[in-house]
Length: 331
Image (cartoon, rainbow, N blue to C red):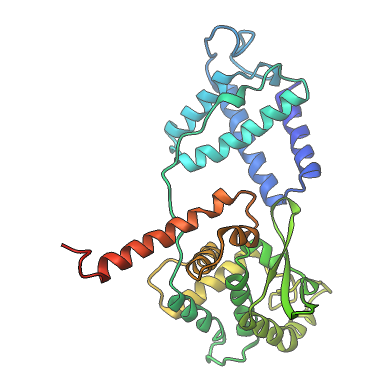
């Protein structure tokens, strides 16, 4: 099977079977393209014959990919003259290639999966960056002053306030937030009363239902009543919850600019990104006593191990507070 045909078959497979977004598919295509370009110019890898059959310096058959090829690719990425990649980026690209070789082995194009025993370089642990509750309140307050004259009822300001309140209230990824439709925000009723929720579609097209706090629901209602109808009248009909001023669905790039503008107005010293809201959401819940498995469900993490990194953040904060506050903790 030619390498280029095998790659296209694999990309079609993951697009259909796993329901990945175009953004994720583009990342896979880039990673596999980098691997194909490297392997086409890499020197023949001498081995015991198990790594690559044949003697051509150009590998054009997926069946000849061996473990040494993947290991060499990792070394190339970490040391390439055009710019060595960080361990985390190398791990991501290797993950794409390993997923491809596993698929190729399953299809019978490879006798054995060469990626099964190739491990990525270990990346240094980086704790998520969360801001304090006080700084988050400043940031959210700044979002409602979007007009040039600072009017709190400015239409763009109402939208921005609703967007940022939703991000903090739900811990949703920015792509999940801008992908919401109006009908995704609803109210559930049972014997215990009513609960405002939002239905979020995450990675792998998996859906989860997340409660909305009163502040977020009030901001969204104000936007839906006063601002969204004006924006919607300027463009084609769309069910999107968050609209740009011309009536189209708000893009991820525009949402990022909304966050940057609010952070600038709030004069925050910390760098604020879309993921800052997600990190702060998780950290503040755990600081408030939430169970880590509840936070895992709200964030949409497949494994609780991914969520547990936030417990390290709160433990670090607890240690810092103790060391600076207790009279017998300092020397």
